[in-house]
Length: 507
Image (cartoon, rainbow, N blue to C red):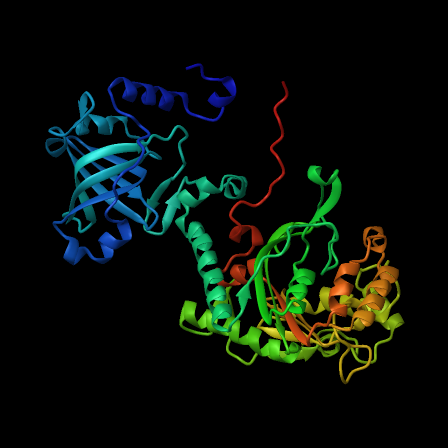
């Protein structure tokens, strides 16, 4: 088989020759399956009952140590690491193709995935191990992974390049299993969220990923076209909100979705163009009811995962014990800045921003400036779970007017560790008011894309059929997982984050 030059740039040619040699010896280095009966963690935890028993394990070789007529290999499976003891006398009688298993060990190098059948025992040094009676290569690695040298919790010479951490996740997860654990924990957290919602009587539903009219949030969308619809322009979903409300109009009382949203905007440690969001809507409730429900959801999950309400995030404690603090956005500005949030005028808010290095280029509307001051100077100072409530009407086009405060709406944001984790409303269900709010949004918003984007009249039509009072909540799943896995960046909890392509070599 001809080996293309571009392939040789990806693999180790010496290892490829080993593959060819193994096949000449009648050994297939990529078999179809391998029977596994036990895992490293299980063997170590249940050693007393498993000692002396035959097991079949499989894992990646992370180190090899030779001692004359014996060898030690450390292998790593999905549960952890375990030592394998290989002795010439035990392996010579067992054949593989034209050679025996002892000879086969000379073709094994670090990074290979091997299968071992043998007896559980403890070495003279007290190391729980498997004494190999049979050994197989079940995936010959053509590219070595730099595992480094490890002693206890310390590791030398292992891969540390952040480029590898995010570009070659499969390598990084193999070298640092704790990073892989974050992805496992991610799915556990999402499962617990689903369990909570299902117990509350919610139904999980789906909403369109491709939309001819996008909505539900202020964001720049990704665009594409559909060939089957005469190349009609469509957008990737920026929010599932308007379709979830259609479910409510259609007679569903409690619905939620956990989905990917796409916003063609910035990337930093808190933001990412493709992110996981959970939204739910519950008929006959308002934002007060949903504050209590969000509080119950998060405190329950934290207690189930950690056995306590108090956890560490980036070396600081977060207390999820209910009730969470509640604070109006104006009171937050009073607490964290030199302004009086309730009485500050548009001019004072703008001047404050300018004195602190922010040139305000938007329309001089008090609600916009209140939001900007909070986002830039208050949010990062809030650590424990806190509901920031009663936002300005101008920045909340899908929300009911506050029943007591003029100019405000019944909305809350949940802030934890300086991050916005959730957003919720007493949902606007008056179709005429909603139509006028959409019109006002166009007039106030600077971005031409929003200003000239067609209004979703079908959504107005749906509301005109009658939507009951409704409380709605959106939670950033990735940010919740960041906190619960003590991750500094959103990219740490995303399986395969986007990176700029590598610079192509000149021809």
